[in-house]
Length: 175
Image 1: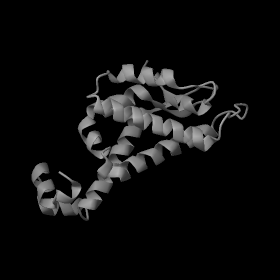
Image 2: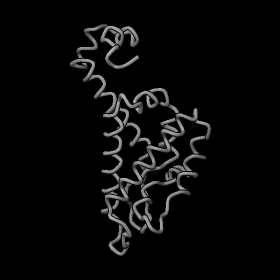
Image 3: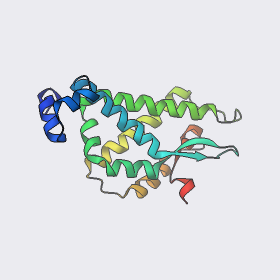
Image 4: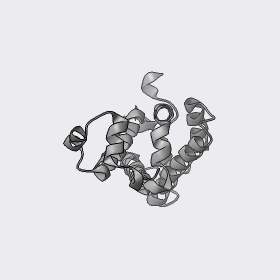
């Protein structure tokens, strides 16, 4: 069913709430979608948030294990939101990942010489991560989240792409 075909009545019936309750929280179904997209992105990034110390001082990183477990646990909504009809979600997700990578890059020592422009590195990493998620969901999550986290980490060229260190294979705090 396309988003245009979904009515507020269908949403409230599926959620077992009244229309009045719906309108207490949302202006309309577009507002519902926007808030849902934002909530999913916020929760996903929060699930992966971790502290790293790649150069001796703590910086925020993204633990792939917990982040991929979040995808596994919420695969149904993510499969929907990553469909072409919800391109806004994909754009927002890409922008948030790029923003986090840029913040991380500012915390890297100046001695790390970047071999390619920072914006290219950031775009490459964010797009690659989303692409892996797309493939994993389309493949019915054939791999366990922790295995996929390790596989993705092994693909990252940390020597030539220092910004890639933002992606941590596991959550170091939970070792």
